[in-house]
Image (tube, rainbow over all chains, first blue to last red; front, side, top):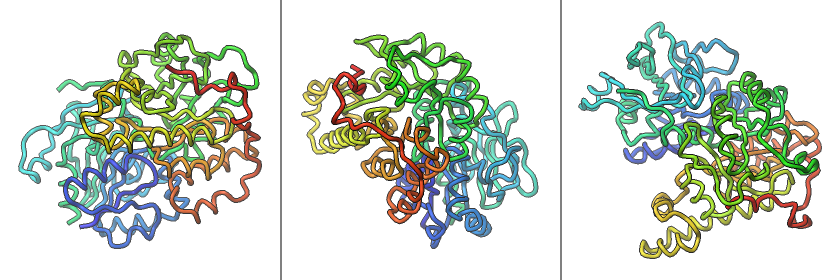
Length: 192
Length: 295
């Protein structure tokens, strides 16, 4: 199992450490040829505008779209924005997932928060029951899901914070900033 | 569960999102938009870039909140702003208007020559400058959730940025070879909190994100700092004091992502126009240097 991490900008090293804990080989992806031989790809947190511009500049948009047709991709925060097909403003998007996303949906940094989430799919996949502690940083929300995308988790007020569409996964929070490896295990099961 | 805001994880976490990126000094809305379009991961809103601060002299204070708010409205990326060392009321004001990060900065005139701000008292995260590991860990001890090596701001001369980054990285390497029983003496000799010395040894890196600052003027400078081991780069006067700011800004963003790829670095270094004129730090009178501010 070899998982790529898009390393244009953001917390790609943190995802790398999580995968290392799980014994998975990782590759930093900065150019299209780095996608060769990968079983899945993580798009990390960071600034979605920066990641999008660099992906366009280095010809990664179409190779990433092609990769996503047959491989697992997981976007956290900025990565979820990049995977979506609508964010209501003009910036480069992969458009792989049928989700509408709103950037900085909770406000500015002083409004960033941590909370516990109930995620049934995650409990089933990892045979656990304790809540998932999620870290939101200037986080987006998923305003709606369409087509075959489904909701994985929502806040108590109903706002969607995780969605899945087949082998594609989007979370508005950052599992890579916690010690809980369950989300990474879940993603590996989609990639394998 | 009640949602928690302003936690240490949140403060440190935003800096982690900035890694591998370039934070650019901007003095107005137009600059901020150029920076965002070029791919900056955040902007630092201030009234004058350090090169102009040097030229103008006088007491340098927090920027007008109205100017900072206009920049916050104009861009979607995080906005940072500077307060004076020890000036916790400027920090309270910046927190109240909702800036995403506060830089308690030696570029402004210090308000307190003995104490820095107790940054744990705030919900907003802080970044602080350092010249060595002791200074960095003291700032983290006070609650800084991000560190930048100081360099010498407003000079366009990378030599001090290199000195400070090498000093910090060297100390981290040295710590990793030390026995645990040597750490207390190390903490004492470097004026650093013992627990943070221990944590730095265990992690093999600083406990928070560490960017380079102060003198980065070219894509090659930025990549040099990245290869020396920093997590990202602040560029102050280097962009908007150059001949073609938009082009240079884009080139520096690309150089930080592809910092290990010399052929890409060559490509992005082409035809950038005039770099900022710059000032040799080695020929500067001691009194003109600002990196020494901070205790």
